[in-house]
Image 1 (tube, rainbow, N blue to C red):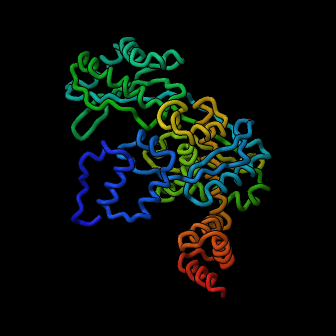
Image 2 (cartoon, rainbow, N blue to C red):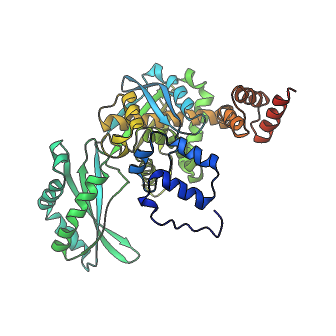
Image 3 (spheres, helix red, strand yellow):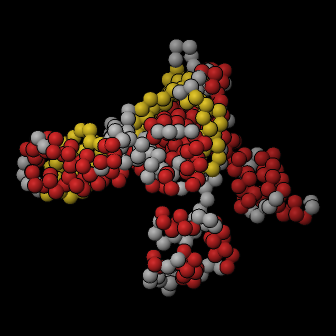
Amino acid sequence: MSDATSSRIEGLHKMTPDARLEAVARQAGLDNEMVANLKDAAKGHIELADRLVENAVSAMAIPVGIATNMIVDGRDVLVPMATEESSVIAAVCNAAKRCRPTGGFVTSASGPVMAAQIQLLSASDPENVRLKVFERMEEIREICDGTDPLLVKFGGGFRDLEVRVVETAEGPMTIVHILVDTRDAMGANAVNSMAEALAPKLAEWTGARTLLRILSNLADRRVARARAVWPLDEIGGPQVRDDMLSAYRFADADPYRAATHNKGIMNGVSAVVLATGNDTRAIEAGAHAYAARDGHYRSMSRWEMDADGNLVGSLEMPMAVGLIGGATKIHPTAQANLKVLGVETADRLARIIVAVGLAQNFGALRALATTGIQKGHMALHAQNVALMVGAVGEEIDAVANELKARGVVRQDLAEDILTKLRAGT
């Protein structure tokens, strides 16, 4: 877009997707090939895209692969993962295979409780306001449950109340948390609606002014946990085990390392969350906040050595995912992926996702402690580089294989290989 081109397109939201794409193409100077690619990318899905987001013009496919070898709580499960990053799915398959001899992954969960926050301001007596709120517990329960009777019908609804006085730069604020069992829903709409309905009453009862009324993505009452044991002969011996433990301790002590360590965990977690139509941003925000809950950002996972010398890994993190509502319920790919998973409850889905995160973490730690992260990653990345330089058909494998044989995966080398291949030299 040139500096002279305006970002203002009058009535864009009222147009059909095709008309909208044409308007954007004119404004941004897209050529016919680009427009055709955008149309093809959304073929068969543009109506759904138009209902899911504002001003839809296309869709962008993310590859969906299947992680194999996973055993979760004694049951084999195939896990769809949506990701564009090379080696992610392969790492999960490999890690899961290596802990099959010890039964795979064992999980637990705390239950589907979400919190919504209501901010109370302008009170000279915030501690007194705090107690006034507690005194209205049963009235609060009635308001919340009355907001979503269907949720109550399915066994969910208001569960408890927390009220905190938080010191801020503008003085103390009284913060009300309503804790809600959201059952098989992620729960954002339910708890937000309850907070909106409750806020005027809180203002009336306390004399304070209500401001924000919104869920918290730090879902620390909706935690899923997974653990697994990797035998020494599946790891590569005691030295590899010890080096993996040293790598973990580095991540747990240093936030610069922890950020990359935890990103590796989220490679697995976010891929399953996305494949099932759940909210990746909510899960990621909650996970990283949970990792810093003691005031120090550290490893999400924990790694130890058991009495037999085996490597033991565990992962505990917020996992606010659902099976009903949003894209999870209406996106056909998400529905198919849930069928592959064979899950019938949000609790089961959460447990599988955390198990995948732990498997991903094992794969990354083992690679770092042995061959280094690049060897496996770049071998898979070679095909991507071949595609980047314009290889097609059988050329893709030919260029990728030559890059791997040289042990260096670079775009300039791929261009040279492709040129020589086409010249027959």
